[in-house]
Amino acid sequence: MTMIIVHDTFVCKPGNASKAAKIFKDMMAKSPHFMHILTDLTGQYHRVIMVSKYDSLAAWEKTQEEYMNPSEDMKKDMAKMGNFQDMYTGGCREIFKVW
Image 1 (tube, one colour):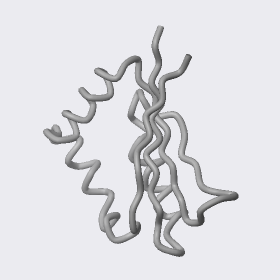
Image 2 (cartoon, rainbow, N blue to C red):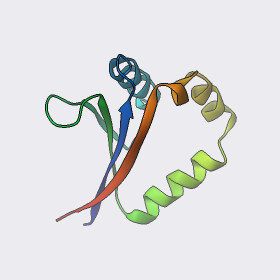
Image 3 (cartoon, helix red, strand yellow):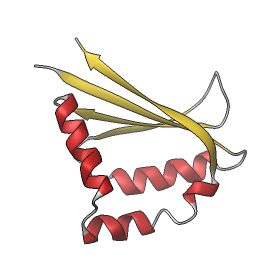
Image 4 (spheres, rainbow, N blue to C red):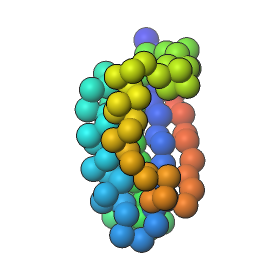
């Protein structure tokens, strides 16, 4: 069975990584795909990595479509993120296939 692991990495402004990690942890708690929230100990500073897993790339794509057309419950959860856009300077997404 194929498994997909996704790392959404955010490079936060100084002083915001812990705040962002808490927001992600609270937001993702309901998601069946959520695995972990990671913060850096080495390497590039101020990183928060949200780790999630999916049965397939198609399942990940379906979830992305749901975020683009959120339900009322999702909209309420998204509102809790407040000014998250102001907390980070950039980031990336990595998608891995587990063998």
